[in-house]
Amino acid sequence: MPYILVVDDDPGIRTLIRDVLECEGHVVETAEDGYAAVRSIEASRPDCVVLDVMMPGMDGHAVLGRIRANDTRPPLPVVMLTAAADDAQAWQAWSGGVDYFLAKPFDPAELLRYLDHLFDGGRRRALAG
Image 1 (cartoon, rainbow, N blue to C red):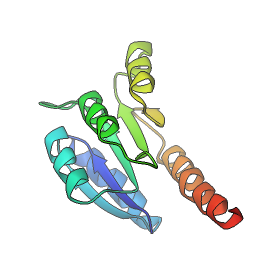
Image 2 (image 1 turned 30 degrees about the vertical axis):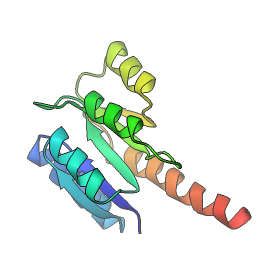
Image 3 (image 1 turned 45 degrees about the vertical axis):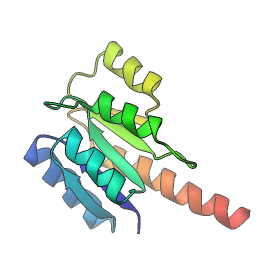
């Protein structure tokens, strides 16, 4: 089962995403800020990171920058969530190398569809190769 790191400073959002993902069979770890996220990624690389943008200390864009600076192949998939879903935030996320961008409030089903595509698509490619 895919191992997903959920990073958000809002405990309610972390719990919601964790519960939704665990119900679908994913293994989930959570982190409350960018610093904890970086430590977690360095300790045990997840299969995907669901990352809030606006957090105190190290924000999501800074975490994404650290992930991309240290990325190996294949790159670590990152989904960004933000309540400030304006064009500038989206552009910064896409420019930083995010794989998927969701505006809060978001539909958990949309996140699940992306993860299904990400993980099922990878399995199909591995089987075809």
